[in-house]
Image 1 (cartoon, rainbow, N blue to C red):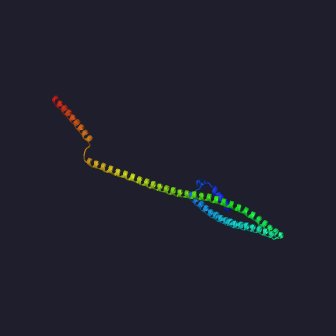
Image 2: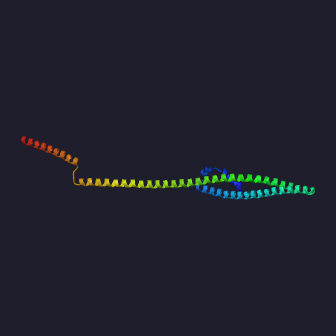
Image 3: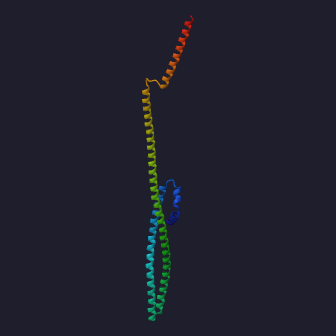
Length: 223
């Protein structure tokens, strides 16, 4: 892939869409940044060569302009000396210089336009690269924050759960101890209901005994 077709692909790429579709956004954006940086170096290198070409053309144009003026001066001198033949030859050289000058100026216009395009492309690529680096920092911060929050929540939940179980176990032990104390006090002692039942049972026996005595007394009296 050529440098400029690759450049267009990068500039036209939608970073958000690429990151949304990526399985590993961090890896994806690192690759994009590396690609952009490499392309930017190549574009700058190309720009440097084109700028050098422009400087060379500007010097050539200056030399051709000077040479054109010199041939015209020579033609004037030859005419002033009555040498029309030399004047014609000088004017022919001047015409040749003017043709080369015109071509050089056209080439300079094209090169200047190319440099302007390169400058614009470098600006676009630099902005894209800055955006990618900004997103990379944002992704790193978001990942670190998410991992920290997850770690805190996991530890917090686990610690809270353990604490809750520990409290529940302690409460159960307290209840066991309290119930044990109550049962210790009841050992060898009658329950209140049992005592009341004993009283009722005693009254019943007393009634039965009194009734039996009365019956036996009545029987003795009859005899």
